[in-house]
Image (cartoon, rainbow over all chains, first blue to last red; front, side, top):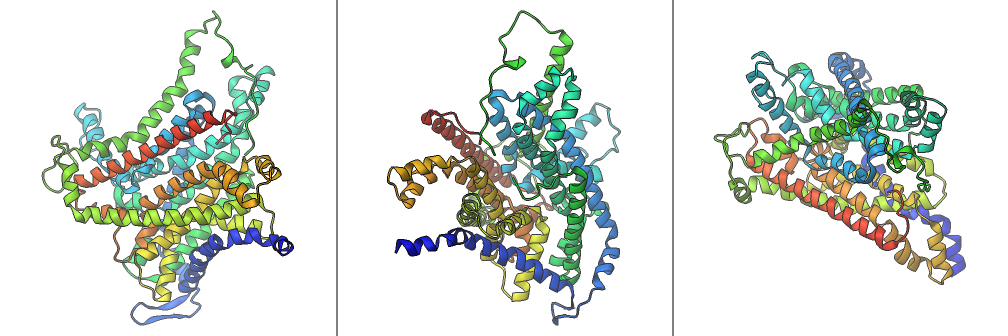
Length: 287
Length: 293
């Protein structure tokens, strides 16, 4: 009996793996394949679809929505750079100067995000409104012209995205900075490096895995987002996410929407790989 | 994650204060980062403050966008607005069921990945990583493709399936982080003292990894109750709270929505505070140096 059990020990990890693994296989991998197949079909919801290997839909969809694609990637890059600039000093302060309140500061960073994403974005609409308390006050003081507005401009969409994805930057940066051995920085100081030089030559390079993970976690959701562009934007700030969503849910134009989704996915993967080469991190799946 | 090495307090900041006073400029420059961080945290809470403030507003008409006067009525009225509380109920059902399922499935995978060497480890790692690296809209759209091509109508069930799917990876990552700092020697000690594998798991392993599982469940619950993008693709006629709020946002959001938002925020705050206090107590009771989280 025990001998038989011992012979089956190799199966234990698979027993643990199978339920969750199957779930991901059936509801993540298979749907991707279905979407790929739908993108190559022709027909309509009424008459039914048939697989015609219509690869022509890809160049057609890309050229039709090139503006929205480029805009999404432009916004995504701007948002990633801004969250990095805003988030790095925060993560640095919490990791190195946080002292006893380190964990509390970290929780304060996460806490706002337990409020609904939609409600937070709607609150930004209120804050940035033309006569809202931010611009309204500045206008009352005569610091801004009366016609000045932020809502429905790229600035409001980008600031909404920056706000919503900032913790995704701060948390990985914090994890990377927290791991750094302080004695390395002290050694640099002992060897007559200025505080700035020590940061540039020791702390910054050692925090690169955090920069990499944080940038990915911010860039990917902001490129695919459509909620910020809908609530804070206008027709001029439509992103590719808006197109995909409306093609799927309003137009029932499944083949074109699927093709657009695939192009977005492929473009993101290419950019991530290029970025991985540039930063020189191959820690994609670890940690 | 490795255990934090014991640091000997030799660095300048830990040295006892001396009579030496740095020049004013240096003292001011040390304040830059803390002040900046305080401002940044204030920025993060700005929309929350607006939400809470407007939950006490007494608006005339549909738009709850200008301050009209303080009232507590919204906190009573909200319970007689089934059009708002029903979506909230749907969201709670989805969040509770999907959190339980995702936590079980994810914890099992986390255990497999940290304690066993097996063929297919790397593939599993990639399978866990991919959902986190895929834009939500792609996951929602592909699930919609699946249901449409199978001819299955969308319902509460398809929402729950989707939420379990995107939560598994987050649970695995959270639980794995906890398991990686785990001292296997404690289990060996239990076995040496005659405990069988099941008893060891029940009495030693599980209590030690439980805080990690709880943290993962909290994260999964928060992600689920807030999800709009994926849910919008797989909901069909079911309306969850984020879907409802998004739907009325063009016409004007009633203050009762802010009331529910505020209540969720308060509950999340209390849950997190309770977890922190509980963890500190545990750490103190164990009388051993607490491990990095």
